[in-house]
Length: 274
Image (tube, rainbow, N blue to C red; front, side):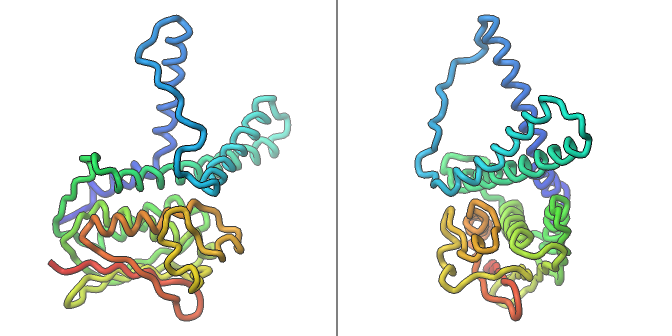
């Protein structure tokens, strides 16, 4: 089964959240105009609490930091800048931080879709998938949003019966994590292998690695390795949680990791043969 066009559409949607957000802002502005004219087009919904129940302060901080930058630089531009260089710098910060915010919100959305028992859109659809084709599509999509210019290489061939979209979601988060925790321009290798009992997908990076003390904690929501803070790597700590959930849903697959010889980490996905 080819996963090309449906999977490409899903990945394009994932990396085009900014356009969706813009449409939401336009729609909200329209509703505000209706309200001001005394016409209400839909029932008033009460505002959500400032801090959603169960959301830790570290996640609130990560969401608030880019919003603060966006708001501050937008105010500077609003006053009118005569210096083009300064305006360019301000705009680059807005683009970078809004992109980070979009990625964070995408992670919340992915996790919610995987854990919502009432979400019928998450119904599993198993079929034989060309894993080489899928991995190359995911690598291309992740590379398109990778400002640090990592080299993502796919090696080997494999096929598996699974939910291709959920497997692609898991691989997207594994590759995104690898780009975040690895030096700019370094190599990330996806290796595919068909064993007698399972199909394996290895994602190897040249990054900061994972401390033994953090081996289990990094798979819990909003938890991150101590060395991530030491190296100043920012994030919510949801990528590996989403990857594990998606893999379990995709084909009862498992995810674990091991230190890489020299520098970095190898994440190993194992899909049982059916």
